[in-house]
Image 1 (cartoon, protein in one colour):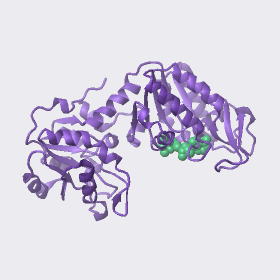
Image 2: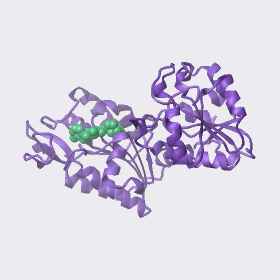
Image 3: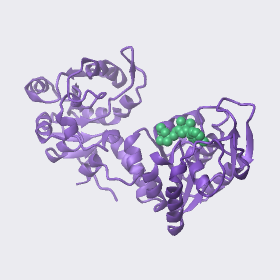
Image 4: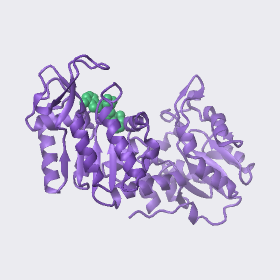
Length: 399
Ligand code: ADP
Ligand code: MG
């Protein structure tokens, strides 16, 4: 059970200075923000704090300046876009610590909102230097972390500062932690996990953690090929990590011991060339893959069986597409299983939580991201959580 303080635990904060760690690390092209998802994610916390009369000071990193000041990685470049998304004036403060920043903050009043300069302009940020954390903490009366996506790093603005100021989870962080707790911390059973994507090697820790925790492990994507090969199936020219066969067998053994049912595809979509709608496309039993063919998606019979398995489950956690979904028709299994999960979620029988860069893209492609219980855009932090690791930024809030 997770325990952390939220904005509900704050008393009267009128005129108090809130240091709020957010994720403003948005993609940009030609000076414009190309995807403002992360900016919008901060709105519930920032508007609530401002409406309650706090002086709101946003702490964030932007790019990888590696401890030096880089004008092309200044958060001043994001300030105007942020103000537009927020619909309120936002000022930019040229440092995240020190006398200049203190002087700027001293001129601010209740409900004012400011963005502090890129925390990573200081080498102490990524080193979690207590001196930097102390200098940042001097700007605020309390600290709010609303950046789950940065919580897998013990940095001065995500971990160090929590030792110096009363610390709270923001609304986005709270929502994410509650969703993750419902999915793997203390889930309703049976629990299913879908693990797909390209390679076993990038998700070994995820697989090892999940076999001990879930009732059904659905393996798809390129990584399923490694498991099929480990079981003696000829996967032809498929993407396959042959050197990881023993590891794959060990994971299957661990699943057996933990009473976790592993689902591998028994029919697959194959082609001789990796292209959209290739003429060589076939749907075959896994035992019938030819030497010059590649497995590029889970087959329709297997997807139907997976959908039936999901209907018996109460909880689903999903990371990784079932096939090479960027190329038609190898998106089909992913789209169909995602639509089944979405329908079960909307019908009230399933709690569904998904995350991962390509997974989010695949769910958007399937048109169901809004129908899942929760879709995490946190990337690295989401994967580390699926690996069962403690996230320092989260642990700091739970202390
Ligand atoms: P995520 O970013 O959600 O964690 P991954 O990065 O692990 O997901 O995997 C996504 C990639 O896996 C996609 O680019 C997809 O094309 C690829 N992939 C899925 N199935 C296959 C397959 N059978 N063969 C080759 N690549 C695949
Ligand atoms: Mg990826």
